[in-house]
Length: 342
Image (cartoon, rainbow, N blue to C red; front, side):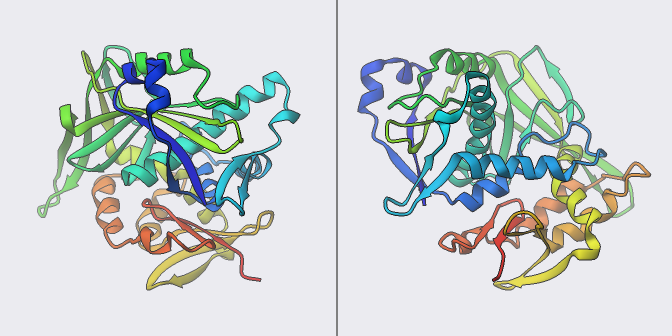
């Protein structure tokens, strides 16, 4: 399956109406199963110690089931059932799907390892001046992306809610840098604070506006505003990683008695069968092994070195090997969704 997008080098390029129609439409590979997996990462709890109810996980997957379909004939993802919604309902659906598809675009096209919610004050060490973009993700210590996600259910050849894109630009424009701190334990047992600093060419900015085109195909308007001014956002990398895996880990830890280890193309995953949806849901076992004792909620876990160790273990993962397999969706983060075996 595929999704469509148009890419603009600058916000001014998108504002120019004639230029909008000159930009070619491109596509990238995206399965409905990918969206099911990514729906679990949208709207993470602001407190990674909280239990995330199973009903909410199922509700998110139900959104994908209700409003997205695979057009087998044209090999494209499409919106559906939008005409059945009232105005107030459309706002909630547009926001949620806009966020899920932003995750899809960024992971698929920018090769991110993790995409983090910046509305979570648990992971924010500090902000210089006020600016609150939606998301930030990194490829490695040399490249990262600051992202604003927007969604609309208006079917058109461009994103009709221009004011939403303008507001996104306003959030991104002031930010000149991201500083990610993490702890690294030394051979002598002491902990040292280290940092990744992202500014200038190391920090790209993206506005992703997702909407149905006139044929109700899924389309993104991807805009890259490059300016930066006065705002620095500082992130606690160890807490951020802990929070990132909170949804999948609480699910696996609470249901460990039903879990099984599955070996897929030489990689081991801890997997649980979903009782409501036809999926097996799990995590790269190498990650589960290090995260398990961080999710016993009666005590505050020691997160020292977690960011560094998780990224090191992800080096042994190869999500691209499943790109053409309709039954498996594996993310760069080690989370896996597989269709159930009949």
